Length: 335
Image (tube, rainbow, N blue to C red; front, side, top):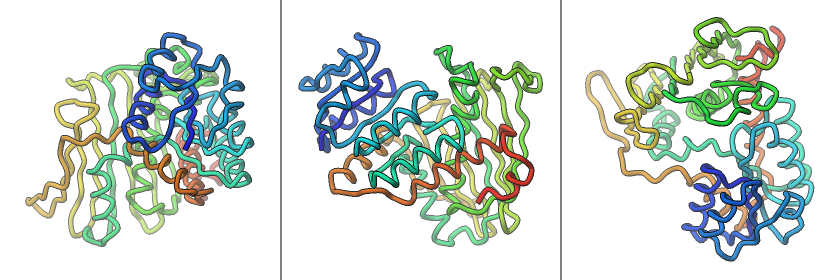
């Protein structure tokens, strides 16, 4: 498999390094407006060509493209690659809205090419073990889930704080992981209602068209009566660098994931019944690059469009509902 990388800042280079270590693909082309970042990435893949533009990269003989650029660019860049017959792996969010996400998924379907999105927490061994317990019936009837992602810091790029360029604030940046995990762990349930409250600087989010939230809480009411609660934030005074947790509760037990000592990387997962607990996973776990490596492996094996990509649109619809970008009737019919 011949792979090109568009955008090799911190996250893009990390994914490039994961692919290089795996040996699942040959990295043949790199494009980034920062010459310094591009050269640093080529030090990992010395045979890659440095391309001045995305168009030049797409002109190379490729099988797929990995995209890690600012959010506003994702949809158009993904569609451009898919229309050239290339598989695409895109940083989250795939797009700034469900409408944009739908265009990308439609392009993947029309091109019959594999589309992946870097919803990286799916790669955690603990999350995978939690999903097994949820799907096996070991928890009994699942009736609640609580997920949080609080970051003591905020993004260091100005475009994150411009709604037109980012699509939103901490919900688009962090909450998207929570929405995806909730739906993935619970088996893609039908969502009957979404309620939310968004804040900026401790005040309800202003109506200014370019303002973004730095704290958000949301509740998803699921078909059958189960409830999902989400909370995320930037720059929260939580006494640690990050608070990242996910819990699913059923009538026969629960599964829990938590980050350790404020870490963004180290997680433990448990299966709890009453006061007893079973460790499902704990560090070390080199999980960050797993989704892109799995996507590259599937492309190299000839996998084409996967209908599971429709879930990316469903996640974007929930995000739209949290932001109030859907009508009340639409919020009651997300599935």
